Image 1 (cartoon, rainbow, N blue to C red):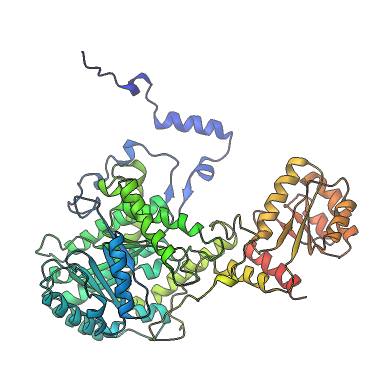
Image 2 (image 1 turned 60 degrees about the horizontal axis):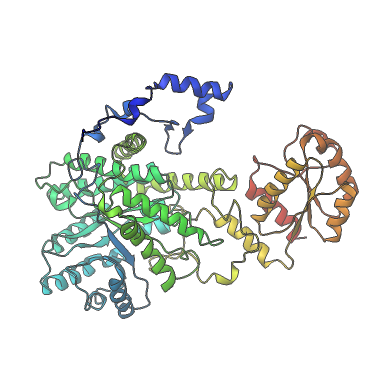
Length: 615
């Protein structure tokens, strides 16, 4: 049988970008192409609606293989990442019991919080440390003692050559979390130097932390987290090579803990770009070992975008985030349990978090494909674009004294807090969507009864936030405070949709308004429609409505709105759904409340809460 070499796409004519662009502009009917189809990212660059082979033809990122320098496609020739679970328990013995249990459920990496060096042996009892990664987080002042205890345990177990894991030495944690004044660089270098000497017997034990997840969970944009992470890593390299350690000794002890948000493709690009840039940075220190330039990354799904209301949506967020990290080829992943914002995760939420990773491995076989995004016109372009923005930030930090100096002066925290403020404002205006919180809320849900704990630090190193602390407020916090105030009120406010006139417009505006006021947890009373404004107002008063929202078309508002406002006569708050051309005329008769897509939803609802709940 003759081989059929016919190629399907040869049957179709080639289309140039110019031809495609001309067709799109014709379909836009005069609308501006850039305004309609080009996306300006928070990272500072534009994203085009389409990418083609010629867009990546000259990119260096496409010219290496997985496991090859500069590691943009991964630091190894497989994608079998470690599934990490951070153990939460009241004692070392209880943590050990939980750890031994989850190791039978597929976990390959463990994270423990260690209060005292004496707890190390208790935590690791009956755990085969040659087959599971061990990561210990402790207060910076205890890091050396904990590292000594761990090394002694590893050596005694005969696992010095096979162990892999970390003791997190993060001297900036108190600075970022509590805003304490100043950083003692000499003390940091002295402690870090002692740590490097302590861990020498165990090649696979990392101890120098770059915890940029703290920045990501405080609202940093993607390029900021990446740029600061690179600068933080470079600060370790510079400080400790200047202290007499070789580049290999330092680079192979650095562990990056990074956040991963729900911006799916951008996060894939972030990790690819970070590996590439980190390899270039380490290269400048002229390390003699081949693996020194390989970035070791643990990715944790975001806490910043987690919500208390409609908390099961957190599962959707963390699933896409875990997916991004897996596609990007990180070394280990922590999938944050969905109920973490309001309680200590229970066995159910922890099991679901583990299974989110197993779904990608066992069902989707993501661990069988190395760098599946490699060669994608879009992802390769994003990789280079975000690398450029992060590199600019890295150079700016280096030019201003380096990462430790900027953190000590509060400049890093200020920049991240400004981004956090901007993101909170975008959430308030629904430019950034949190499903179930500022868009499409479950209006009948209550949450006060399920909140068991508040977010915060429990290490005992400080209790208050200073001026140089990271904000750390989740994106949903403001809306949640609003809804909790509604729950605590003596009577739940009622919002009545006075639907009248044009059928399509009244339905659309009633749906919009119900969604709008539902974000405050108000009771929504929708209607099929009324023949007269008098009938609608009478029904609203009978329902004991606190707010009456007139839902109609712009053309009809000029007549209907003044009639309804006059007939209501102050018996409830009166709102017009939309921003009609006759707004000034309506304001002239006393109508001042309008809800539309340009509103600051949060500020508007806060205003109504003050009027209704505090009267």
